[in-house]
Amino acid sequence: MAATILVVEDEPAIQELISYSLRQAGHIVLCAENAEQAMAAVNDALPDLVLLDWMLPGMSGVEFARMLRRVARTKSIPIIMLTARAEESDKVAGLEIGADDYITKPFSPRELIARIKAVLRRRSPEVADDMIEIKGLQLDPGTHRVTINDEEVTLGPTEFRLLHFLMSHPERVHTRTQLLDGVWGDHVFVEDRTVDVHIRRLRKALEPAAKDTLVQTVRGSGYRLSAGPAMG
Ligand code: CA
Image 1 (cartoon, helix red, strand yellow):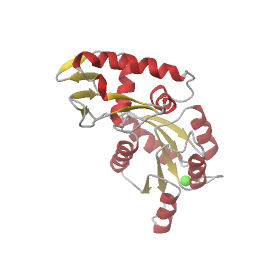
Image 2: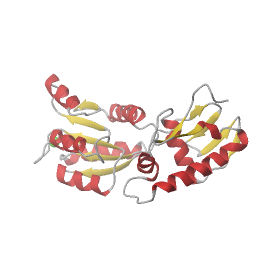
Image 3: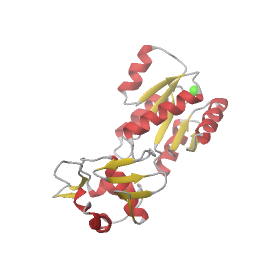
C-alpha cells in the first residue's frame, strides 16, 4: 500500500524517524514543521493521510485538525494525532475533533505503520493494495490486473482507477464530482461529462463477460457499483 502521507511534526529527530519508517514501508512522505507549512502542503495536493503532532509551535495540531475538518475539500482526510501525553482527556479531545486515531509517544515504527494501514483500510480502501472481488469480477491493485472468471479484461489506466474506486466502495452512489475527486484527483479541472465517457468505456470492456450491469447509473445522482443479488 503506497499512500502519500503528510507528517506534521516540529521535532526534527522524530520527524526523521517517522519519515524513514514510512518510506521503508513504501509510502510517499511530505513533511511540515508547523500548521502553516502543513496548510501550504495540503493546498498544493491532498495527502491520503495526515500524521499530526499535538504540540506544535504556533497553531496547535488540534486547531489545525479542526481547520481541516471545517473545509469541504479537506474535511475527509484521515488524521492520526501524535501526542507525548497519554492523558485520557487528550484522547477524547482528539477523537472529538474528528481524528481517526491517536498514538502516544514513544511508539514503535511497526505500531505506527500498522495503525496507518488500519486507518487507510477503513477510510480509503482505494489506497489499500488489497485484492477485491465482487460477483466474479476480480481486481488486483498490486499487478493492475482485472479478471472475470480468470479471463483477463483489458482496461485503460483511467478505467482501471475508476473501477478500483467503485469496487472499493460498493453499493455507494457517487456523484460525478465525487468520482472526479476520487479518481482524477482534486485540482484537476475536467468536465463532468468526462466521467460519463469513461463509465461507458468501462462498461464496454466488461460487456463481453456480462459484467457491465454491475456498473449502474443512478438517475439524477451518479454511479454505483452494485454487488446486489440481482446481478449474475
Ligand atoms: Ca511537538
